Length: 152
Image (tube, rainbow, N blue to C red; front, side):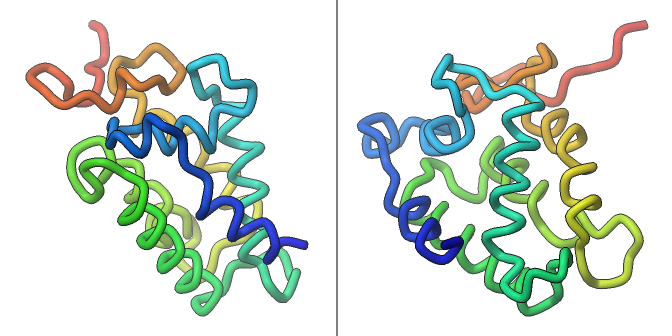
């Protein structure tokens, strides 16, 4: 069932994504209620789906080979659907899904708990304006779009 879902994820594309609007493909796939913002709960739900999609042996861990498949699939998806793939906000998006960002105990594999626990950190990484949700505005390039600064 998980393998059948993968082509759907890769094939999904909106008119916005086709027009190469940065972040449009992400929003289409991660904004579950289509309200224009991705919340922490939506990130956690989708990350759990993604985890189980790539946990091919269903042992609750993404080992090196499963993570390699995940990385390759993400790279292909970003290449085909993401404007500015590998730069700026899209880079932060990708970096937050890499093995190193999710392997909190450093054992070379990622458990379901590790992957889900990193959801809040990933949200903070891509929520440039610091409002607690991800919107298309968080993908706009330009001056002053760096990470939100802590208030004194």
